[in-house]
Length: 106
Image (cartoon, rainbow, N blue to C red; front, top):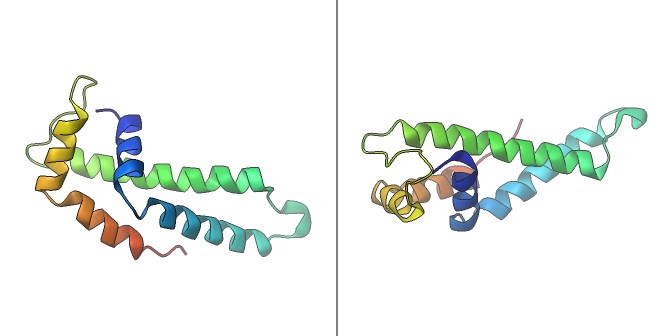
């Protein structure tokens, strides 16, 4: 599994994904309101920034999961089902649901 597939897996398996994206959007829009009018971002730039925030979170999670003992591996031939089983066995999805639900941006 590579990073892009891992990102898709999280987006499909985590119910908190939409909540994260809404919180991140609210955060970016709040930051945008305090920018001087001429430096305010348009909607497209805010969306890109929110997506970049999500990718950063996914990259961090991917690196942590890869470092766990028994990680199924990151080559392209490793089945998604093997990753799902591994993450369910280690309750990673459940932990991520809780952690991402409580995330606050500063």
